[in-house]
Image (cartoon, rainbow, N blue to C red; front, side):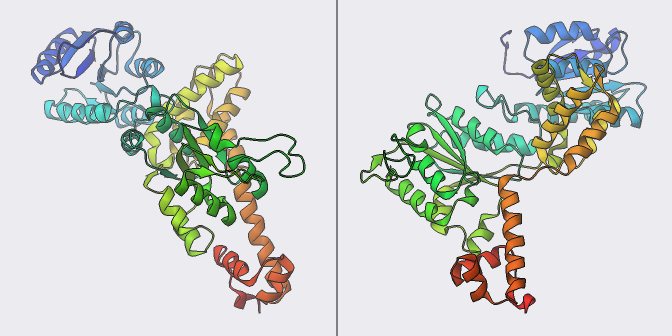
Length: 446
């Protein structure tokens, strides 16, 4: 990779019109850009292999490799580089297709210099906003909103503070937690993750804090627990909003005292971990309902990072889809190289209620079913339809069952909370908290 001669931005200019290439080079160098000018797409790809560019400005209609095809090739090399296309034959349809496929901007010829200057500056602002290194290489984005989250995450990683990541299911909370760990001073120590909603209370306690030999039936050996496994590193507590209240008390004590006591042991064990937690729930509502401790919330939520939904970062969908397609094709050993134009348009305009997790499933299904190198529209539509009614997570299924259970219980007892609590094996206070959580009013059942 070549070294910059100065701190000016590097621009790759591609156009088969030699006179325009010369004119634009002079103008852009006058604006302070380091310009590398080539006359065709293949030459541009060779330059990209050995140089680091901040932005690419290319003609759309060129012999051989046209602008859109060049863009597709560039995305296989560097998915974060903004690409701007120019054309003398531009139409609204061209612009829509280009931007939906992930092209940063589209300019008609003759190019208005002020318009070009503004668009280039906008592209540079995005390109230079965050330059994630290896710590965030698994997070593919060019969304300003997501780049802002990464910028905050990098700065937070350098400080020993607890982080709460919020966002809908499937937005990539564990991926971001792992990136923060990699960017921190603890990156040479373990990153350990656990889903707090996936285990019953007694198993979750043992997994977190460990247990002594003979602490309970089946405990034939001592178990150190995840706090000790993550010693010196980071412990990621996913779906923290699902942690039972009794364990919330023990977690708070562990964080305050920096010590844990394994189940069945009388000895305290020192711990040195950074806690990153995540939830798709509204913890303010959980606190109001009495199902989440306020003191634990403020201990965990020193800094809050909110991940955007995939729908709100639609500019990332082409980048993610291409990357996932490439990974899946390599993993399964099949020759699939791209989505058809109408298939990509369908991906970009879909609502994605399951976020990135749903996109992963859609791409996997397409790779499994396609018989051609280009994924057609009908396979994308089929996969979208199959994933629309996505299988609920364990937490979602449990919440749905709990709500139905309470509804039937209150209906059976004619809204008598005391009788309902007795049948459920809970006290009245717990029953009222559960009813509030699920927005159930006893009066509606009398």
